[in-house]
Image (cartoon, rainbow, N blue to C red; front, side, top):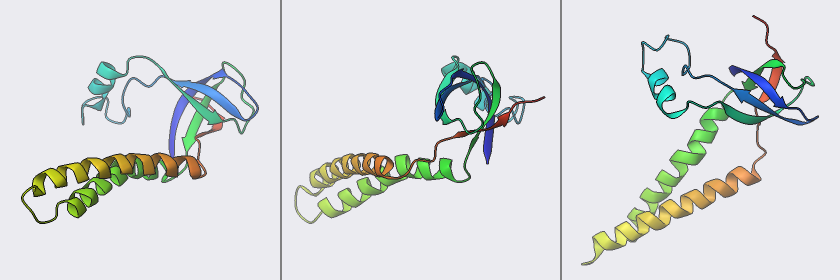
Length: 141
């Protein structure tokens, strides 16, 4: 389970807006390992806000721990990145038949497959029951 610390910005009974200010990357290596902290500082210098389920009735200003269900991140990445890429390869393979214009048809098929993959990913994400991150507990040092 992935967890991060956040502050409640707007509190509703079901969905709550939290602000996670983690400008240190994953904070596991003190910025000496993979270099993600430098990239985060370069591109993500403003706090990010997320809608989460408020299971513990947290109030505005509370410091909380936000958790994401096991495997939810991997499923999301697969849906957004891998499905369109797979559809692009399928489109290129199906459209790239025999003939003089084989490369042109393969390129058109790849673009059509990529577009179809993005549409399919969007449709699947809307239809599928979303597993929102949730407030697991109050933060205590």
